[in-house]
Image (cartoon, rainbow, N blue to C red; front, side, top):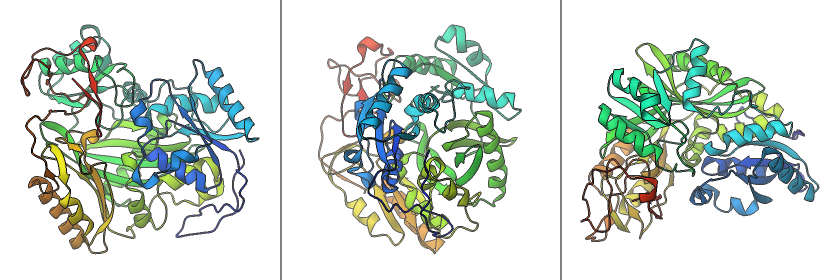
Length: 501
């Protein structure tokens, strides 16, 4: 594919400057939502057109998931297409759409988790830079563990499948509790639950197998895994032809809250020359090799256990969270983030190779992402806490869908989070003071003023219903002992997420 060559150096990075109004080619983005929209925005800046391709079954609601920082980007897509019944038909439709503009397709990759498999297959079919299909469905978290185990890397004990008795019951009977249950294909913390006994695990297994994923489509299978004890880290890479560049290392601030074991409170950058990073980075690069990831962005989640690093899951796409972390990364590195590096990996060889092997140490700034957590619920009448946050010394950016009139519920996973705040300051004491203030606002329920409500729905999330099933003929809050079947499901749309009753 053609690659831009007109570029200048900036803070150690080499961004492309486009000097022509003639599009350089067409980039196919498969399921571009959340951070995928940030990547789309960067591609457009480089002078390329975008063909947006939606996979079959992808949620209509998620198609509108566009970060505030990227509002209007979808109107600039050259065309939007939907996946056809066969790969050949899809490839033909994509090529014909590009030809209508007298352009050719120069790259194809995933803009979101659900698009990984199709992007791998389509890029291979179109003879573009690709991760290929030698490894079928590399999104499958069970398969990921099997592959890294074969490479001699630490992996989790696990069992997975579609039938409790045949596939996972033996594991659930002998494994020490608690255990983690989750869909084999998921995004964020969609459907993840820590189960403390066999009956709880059995219940959640059946719930998942009768539920729809947040990105759309039924849950294909359920994975049951040992509970890894330790701190969970994120290692973000961008690769080109098997060369892996570490663009950031993070440690999750995950805590129990609102009855859920895994609630995200934030993401803190980790110095790449720290002891833990020196262990994590080589491990994750070997994981990428084991999974056949040679090109594009990746988002690896790893638990640092007493025995060393162990993969939680590898997401073969960019770090999510609406790309809220992008301005922070640019400040930490002096000018680049995974978004720019992703575009470089596919469209600008020179700029990719100019990227450092890993971020600078020490960082060029101090900061972190604070994920806002709600300990209350109701309809929002005012947002005084947001005003206070934006007045903080270290405030950089806030992304939230909550506004006056929105319904806010208890935060139990990423999809019920109420926003993300990026803080950055040269004085670490100022940063810590502002983080503490935000946590105080959450705990004291001072982020919002709520309207007086007499009937509030407990809507944990589509896959975190936690045994709650309501019927129109029951008082609010009544807990029913049955697990819903597909026929019992009724979806209600809200401004936060789909709620299944």
